[in-house]
Length: 163
Image (tube, rainbow, N blue to C red; front, side, top):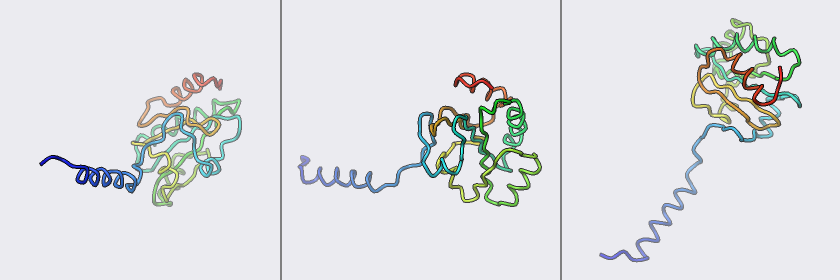
């Protein structure tokens, strides 16, 4: 049987409708993406500073290893060229706060118990660290990075920021 326009068009229309009605698949935030205005307000990155957004959780062993190095990097940033904000993605607030106390986290932390912030970034692994300048993502690291403090320092230098 030779295909006719009557049996090809309905199939094509079905595929178009399926595409239009299917929700957008979540994709991770990429370098070059602009963060939403709502997220800009939540992160509150001061103008003129590089935002370093660090996603972590109490169940993430690599996160626990990286946080002391991030704290060390903050102390070395005497000119305050970067602004670190942690995003604790623990769904249990008490566990998240206990983890923050255990590591003596002294930089700003947003407790993302409802997963709203992490869903905007949608990293494929943890820990996840993003650099933001003028509301644009200019760099990121997904997964464990040994000596993250040195990596941050090198990345900032490549971005033209001297710490």
